[in-house]
Length: 470
Image 1: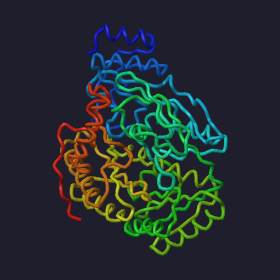
Image 2: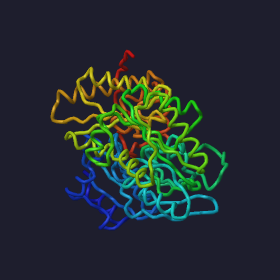
Image 3: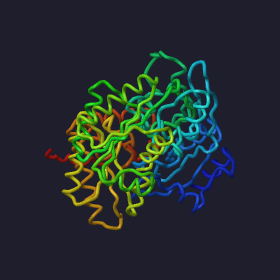
Image 4: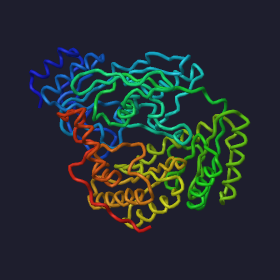
């Protein structure tokens, strides 16, 4: 627990109303969206400015107090769980869109801005911010940057890091630095901007971000393809890309996911098929029409049972919203829902889907698979019950084999959820000991006292690599 003296120093910096060390206040921020992880912070602090954050970090560095920057807590790898206590830092006062620069096509924001609020604000001016995590209606830009969040539009438009031009950062010693700028070209020194994107709050506190915008696409169309064969759906994904078509979204849902989503959304999704592909293309009307026709032809050639183009904008929006609700729908099935994000090259999607199915059967667990098939980022999701210890052991072993299968197919253990605590034991599988050592050297250089989100990314002990027979 922090001493009363430290609490009083925090109150002097941010005001009494912005420091909460009550039992209830601390409990609220003791967990995020990750099952099985909870740990109480000593105090919750809500600063109002970069200057206040600088003073807080100087205090933390001096007394070696852990500090965890936190957005909305939608994290799925326990990355914002304060496992070593200390301070949880909130950004509810730093939630302003500071500037929309229509000449340079940028937007400058504070970290507490809700992603969907930003998207709507720039779209009102005919501009487009593509990163669209499924949690965008509640997730914050600061959280998106710390996790390098992806989303449904990642195939065509990339992920959060592709839109971060500049950052204001408070380092663990309290120093304030600025990286990047409103520039198309800038190679002055190390690319610190990209270093901090995806750093999961382990290197410093992001207090401001300048993001790239692009013009709004002129039009879009949505297509739904139905399959009785998982392999055929996966092959369709590879064939679409091989034909040099890059859709705005190319999403995959298996039958168990479809059933859960339809029961939740009730929009008339078919539940008697093994899989669906939800595909959207945007851009100039003539290109969208051409691409959608070619995609429909490819899906039919790959044994799609049905291919249907959404008749209007309202139907397309319902389909997109149904896909975004997949996690919420699956969470209704069992008391505990474990969602992962193993990622493989697009050409290996069919093998990965089959591997997940076989692993689920091997361990006698239910795994529903959906995800961003176009960029190889699948979300195997297990509805389970944390109170069933035997099943939880089997679930853990199943996901361990899923991560191993992804690595063997040239993939990775996480495409967009981050490492946090959950994936830390497996990080060495991807990076090897030498890669871990290099990352630790960077962490130590920025944060020698290890106050920034300690216990995340780097595991105390790596898991022994398992071998999966394909």
